[in-house]
Amino acid sequence: MLETFNHWLIFNAVLVALLIFDLLILTRKSRVVGMKEAAWLTAFWTLVAGAVGVWIFVAGSEQQGGEYFAGYVAERALSIDNLFVFIVIFGYFSLPKSYEARGLLFGIVGALLARAVFIAAGVAVISAFAWFLYVLGAFLIYTAYKLAFVGDHEVDPGKNIAVRLFRKLMPVSDEFDGTKFFTRVNGVRAATPFLLVIIVLATTDVVFAIDSIPTVFGITDDPFIVWSSNAMAVLGMRPLFFLLVGMVKLFRYLQFGLAAILGFVGLKMIVETAFEDFHVIGKLEDIYLSLVIILGILIGSVLLSIILPDDDDDIDENSLHIVGSTETDN
Figure 1 (cartoon, rainbow, N blue to C red):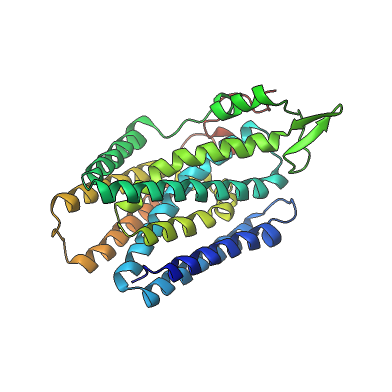
Figure 2 (figure 1 turned 60 degrees about the vertical axis):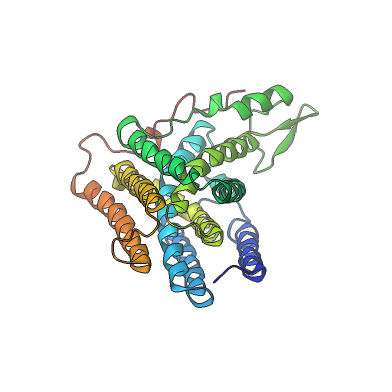
């Protein structure tokens, strides 16, 4: 079992090394990431996540390995929805294409920090109050209903509380200065729109963490598996973003697929909490069954989008429910 301090140390050291590699090598220069590069990078991060899963199988147990992959797939599916919101944020601030990769990297760091906090809090609460699993399960089912029938998060970066507060504390320049956070305007130190982008991404990451962490807790109550599956799914978000921009039309029915996944995991959490010895096939076999169901729903929603395309005009990144101006509001 992967429960020792050394296992936590090894994984987190590898995670930090991967982030440094991403920062110093993959996103060192501001440039536009094309579809071909995004596809290769997506494959790379998927292989890295797979290698972590194999390590968990070998150093841990088959159950932990199965739970890791089920959690990873669920988190990766939810991250697709998150990336659509990132498209909205970048469009609102008119972020140059060449700065998007660096902005996403900071967004990934924020996502990891938010998830670390929520996972630690979730473990503490669940350990003290087992009934809290019912609350999380009900929350997931409610979120599934809202996603399917009400609509997903509507983001208006101009109304972001953190941004509005920041504008009152410090002047913001009209123009980007590369990927710098601060610049000087007429001799006065001012924040750049790029910093506002990072602030919105960071606060949005908190909202996403509230949705995603209960999902993985519905698959496993092992803190190491919850953290490792989340972290590896988040690391692959950046190249996946650039793939999605070019394939938005393939995800017309994605929100219904995500709703089905959330509903399934929420119901599973409630049933397994109420009946501790409940298993459809067996304890280990149920993990693989969950993985197959999650993958099936995700693939099915994409295939349905291809088979039943939208009859409306072509969909592009500018039609993704962008609320407010497309220029920085200074």
